[in-house]
Length: 113
Image (tube, rainbow, N blue to C red; front, side, top):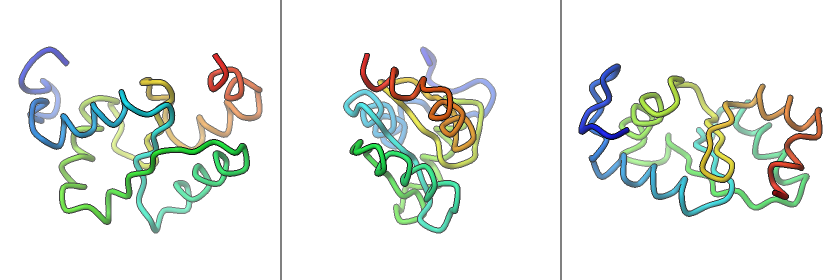
């Protein structure tokens, strides 16, 4: 992310939206970039709720800058789908990856380490 623009997407990685995404990921242990109507996002939020983990949730469809933030997430993670789940600054993927980590016990380990 060193350059001004992501080479693949042409997204300005120094825009206010990119800075917001990057700061949110850095400043919170668990972050979900979500859409309020998405069933996969609801599942992901439910997993963390059931674990008693407070996740920072940004509902992209409720934010004026949400579409630009989704472009930033695509540039950062090479995926555009939601949810985009970050744990301790690292994108672990979406709902399927989250469920796999939960089933294997790795999610608990990631949150404890």
